[in-house]
Amino acid sequence: MQQTETKERKKVIFSAIQPTGTFTLGNYLGAIRNWIPLQEEFNCIYALADLHAITVRQDPKKFRENIYEAYALLLACGIDLEKSLFFIQSHVSTHAQAAWLLNCYTQFGELSRMTQFKDKSARHTDNINAGLFTYPSLMAGDILLYQADMVPVGADQMQHLELTRNIAERFNGIYGNVFKVPEGFTPKVGARVKSLQDPTKKMSKSDENANSYIAILDKPEVIMKKFRRAVTDSEACVRYAEGKDGINNLMGIYSAVTGKSNAEIEQEFDGKGYGDFKTAVGEAVVEELRPIQEKFGKYIQDKAYLKECYEKSAEIARKISQRTLDKAMKKIGFVLK
Ligand code: TRP
Image 1 (cartoon, rainbow, N blue to C red):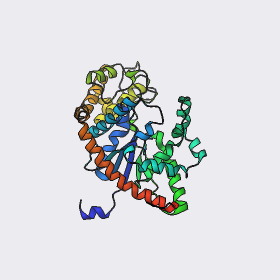
Image 2 (cartoon, rainbow, N blue to C red):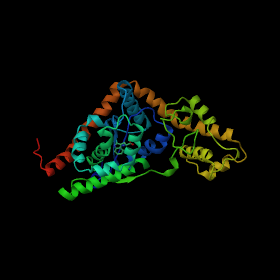
Image 3 (cartoon, helix red, strand yellow):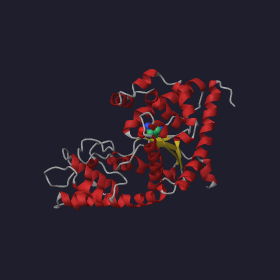
Image 4 (cartoon, rainbow, N blue to C red):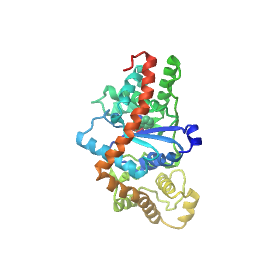
């Protein structure tokens, strides 16, 4: 790195994703893919939020597989360890420590107002555990430990980010400047992928109907079949318009993958039927995912390589985060070891 660059501190980006099962095309276009170009410009710190994942019950064997799979998949998507950190949250114990501290600076009322908590506790009535409730303080710890300037998040996590800012401001208000107050940003709206079977709903891997989502690891023939079955309308004209949710969604996917505008897509399929359009969308997605699937296939078989990667990042993450944790603990009045 050149001297001039080191003087001007690169902005720090932090983000994390939970390792829960297959990622969908929606996760890829809406979140993961946006992480990749950020690496050129920023100091990116990415984590697999395995501690967050146990707020709902996990099958141990499946959970472990999901962690390996998610790690290998994100590497395959283009996280570059020459430029960024990518570690497993539970390997860096400062996260759990920070969560405890921040819990004591987070109000019961604030956590009670989190819509994700309200939704999840309504859906999992048999397991409304304290971790589900304090989940946002753990997330605040993730972010604040790295003095992150910016946090790319989906719309569903914006409320947690706002809470993180409030916690940071409150802490700083008491003890002086300890935490950087982070800005959240949601990457562009164009990539909000909807269900292929009910295009008014978000594409979700928890959907009972597997035809409604494309998994990043779906085989080409499966991807083609799912697009061919995608719900459309009876107009038989490829154009972006209100009420044409199915076609709008397919156009959004095609546009995200090819970079073509809606006008260009309409022109390309002028006079052609939905069959041709669906085939084109399917083929474009297959080509986009092919190199990722190939790399994934290599990484997932090489546990030693994966270990080398996550350990290298965790070691650096431990050092960076410990500095912030020590600073916060000292301010609170703890005797540091
Ligand atoms: N809670 C986030 C989600 O489920 C994942 C997450 C954990 C996260 N820690 C984070 C996202 C810190 C951004 C920053 O999507």
